[in-house]
Amino acid sequence: MKLIKSLAIAAFAAVALPAYAETTEIIVHYPMPNFFKGVMDTISTEYMKQHPDVKITFTSPSPTYEEGLQLMLRQAGTAEMPDVSFIGLNRLRVLAERNIGTDLTPFIKADSNFANEGFSDRLLSLARFNGKQMGLAFATSNPIMYYNADLVRKAGGDPDHMPTTWDEVFPLAAKINALGDGVIGMSYRWQGDDWMFSALLFGHGGTVLSADEKKVTFDGAEGLGALKLIDRMVKEGKMPPLASDAAVQGFNAGKIGISFWTTGALRGTINGVGGKFDLRTGKMPVIDATKGHLPTGGNAAVMFTTDAKKQQAVYDFIKFAAGPFGASVVVPGTGYVPNNELAAKDDRYLGKFYDANPLFKAGLSQMDLMIPWYSFPGNNGVKVTQTIVDNLSVLVEQKTTPEEALKTMSTEVQKLLPR
Image (cartoon, rainbow, N blue to C red; front, side, top):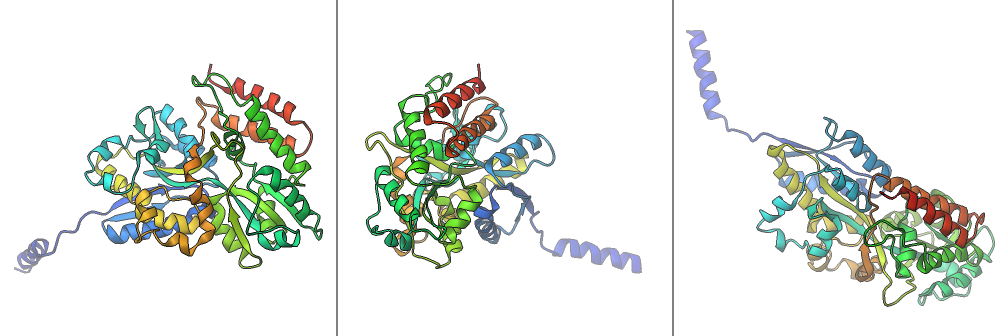
């Protein structure tokens, strides 16, 4: 009788207790934790709050976009592959050409509310290759000028009316450098990848490769103009060959007058400066006012899971991260410009943010100049990037001339292109 009674109780409990939905775990990878850890934590927490049936789990982040890409290439097709990763915009092509990653086009077409959530075709195109929507742009940036207004004043400059051309920047940097006491006039973050070289090349109206992508085109006047500017930064602006970390530390300590780097570093710079001096931001000089542009830095959220049961949940998370709420976290938390048009206009998100935070306006004001960060074809994209950086290093160290650096760089890059 006791056994029958126990079975009856168990059967009643099985019927009476509510059925709980199974939790879906989404494994997420991202790069550059110094930029993105805080915003990723905030976005994932809010998403799980709105979707209690989903658990977001982060894998160890990668220090750079390049290392993040290499990790995804190694893990492709294995159990270690995350469901989502945030891939550098200039590295998406590598995945597309190798057919790694899930095309989001079917999900977008089936999403009746997608058009109302601020995703413009211009921004979608940043992560689209050969008709395949590789992801959704999550963080987008352009290069801006950071400056120490206190040092500018001491050097006789006017921080309220900063130089708008390179010809004006270099004399001011030299005057700041002449202040002594370990003060450096300027820094330009050419290290790491080809993004800041692209900024100078595109600023001249130049291109990277020919339309058929078989020949280098930065070996002409525009490319030489870009390298001559870097040479002038050293000779006229008194820029030393600082490592990137040293440049960050020097600027934050109040020892560098003018620095050129991504908007994405703005929040970190504000925190690093911490009120030690009057921090300001301004536009990046562009040589050609009619056809000059700036490269779009940043990354896109890419779906890797092939589990049909999980894909819809992953798509929803990607859209949430790249959507208005995500943008309202990324912009204040980093300095990146809004990748979502609704977020930029709606007072629920960033509509009032810029008036209250003028340091963020420089990047926003340059959005009309932004074009895609060039993505090299073939399997040697990372090698091409390193080739460009290595040649810039030799130039900054004044061991070569702009002409010789351009000749070497273009010849080496040409050899690395697909044949």
